[in-house]
Amino acid sequence: MRKLLAVCFTLLAASAGAQGNVVFSAATFSRVAGVPAGTLSEDHTGSTITVATAGTYYPWITATAGPMTGGMTADVTDASGDHLTVPKTGAYLVLTSGSYTGGNDDQSRCRVALSGTGSVVVVWERTMSPAARIGAASAQGLVTATVGQEFRIECTSNTNGDALVLHNTQLTAMRVGP
View 1 (cartoon, rainbow, N blue to C red):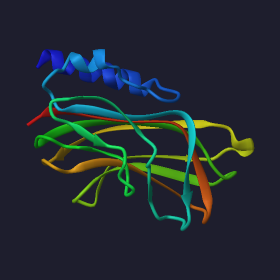
View 2: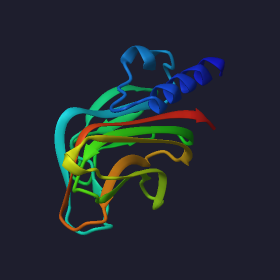
View 3: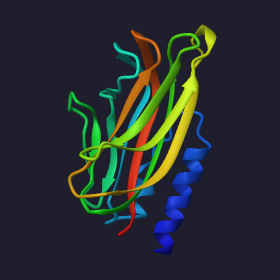
């Protein structure tokens, strides 16, 4: 348990200090071999989420699967949203960060949603700056998830037709308790 907590604190510290993407290596995940954990990321690709209708959430569909342990799986081909699938019921630590641009002065919001519940695990929000400056945001949280549920990132804006360009994005989930 001490080993698991040490890794959790390492992950939290890395996420909290991020100004962009935090990608966890296979070496980091090897420290918790057997514990359900996984990560999705996107690094400097500049993929776009077009918000056709303000306030409606649209999925992140350009992720790359990173290290997985303990039966955690990823699907990065799902048109309804790239996601991590929970292999074992329990409490999960969810870490997410992103850097992105959008319309000048538009309010953007991204969240990690948990499938099958309608619940939102964490939310990060920011007002877009002029001149398409890249800004970053992050969020962390704990949630109880059951086998087969999926963690996925979804984004929206307060402006119809806004194009959110994701420059760096990361989603990590790790089981931390029963």
